[in-house]
Length: 90
Image 1 (cartoon, rainbow, N blue to C red):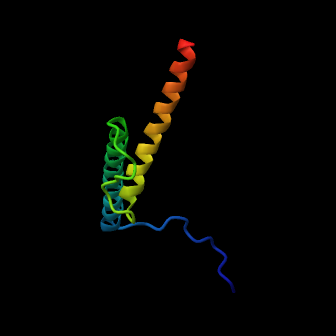
Image 2 (image 1 turned 180 degrees about the vertical axis):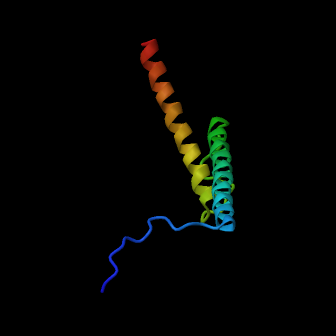
């Protein structure tokens, strides 16, 4: 005879496993805060006129990508503002 009962969807966690899961989520939040700070550094570097090739982070890290993304997004916004101002004064 074959047992045809459905397996439980979620396995019950012990208290330690639940704490570990919460700590992992906190680590992710902390990492996101770090990446957000690096994004802001890239943004402010663009506003100060710093060249994009002068990225202070190693190329193989996510920090490099995040700084670069902040710099590029700021550049897009600045260009958009310039073009909007050009049409407004014309």
